[in-house]
Image 1 (tube, one colour):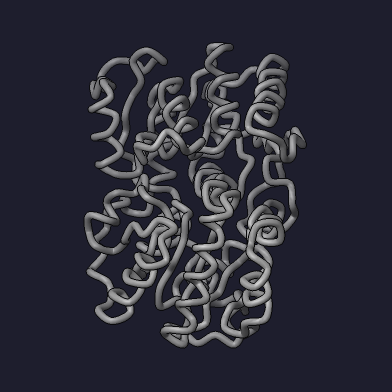
Image 2 (tube, rainbow, N blue to C red; image 1 turned 90 degrees about the vertical axis):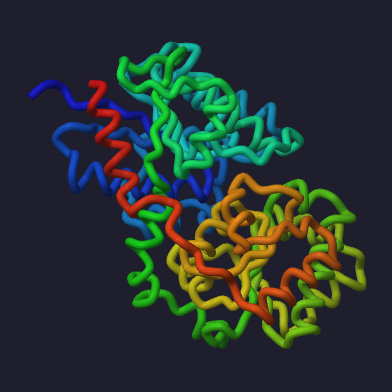
Length: 384
């Protein structure tokens, strides 16, 4: 047997840690003799509630390398990450750099690896919101165009890359100039199916918060487009209070650290006081993945600006009001399971009313068969 495939997996934010769990598990259980994974954590999310809890909960090995970059402006943070990743790649040999999603950690890993001619594999390739005002859109586009393997979660993602001029031929060896586009399925679907029952057994968040299944609304707000704009953040929190007032359903909001900071700075004082005092708005600290799955499975409705939460809601057949003018998960909108409401109070209220009155359309499987991680590992090994 030859040398194992040497993968440097780069993560830095909560969703990436969760996605990495699927492939790390696949390597340990099916490819241990053929793949050697080194885990690099950039430190983009350095709060224990946003990072370490997910390693502990999902059984991911501790990071082999930590950069400890922490919070900063996009340029400063990304530059520090590029410098750190470049140093790691120059110090040791790796066959592939494996990247997830669309964060600054993704961008930094792609740029550093591409400049040093280390092949890049991008998981969640081909997603497009078609809004370049979002930093995530820039990150995912740059990463796709630096990659040698493009692992797409859905047929729509493949179609996006085809429209951008990517060659769909996979008969020749992949290169950065001629990458392989693979419809692999979604590793988050792998994880959600794998951990759903574990969440039921272990999570106590419903009992702790006095929540009944189908008896509350789950909300998440974290994108800086919403949190850092005083008009948008005030409109969103006014809308959340309105949902409790109009429907009598508690609104549960795990508060991202940035969101909590901006609530203090930007919410109008009467609204800030109302949010703090209202018994129908449950403000929680960041929750672990198992608690989040338990909340998603039990919610009547999900209101979010998170791409990952939109998907997870779909996995569990829950309707979603999206707090953005667009989404990279266009399939959900096309199937009527999600409605784009932006930060418009009236549209949020209307979409919520329709879902709570009429329910959600059937959510057919569009994210693969729950074996995306195995498919990604096998595709990488075929080349080597």
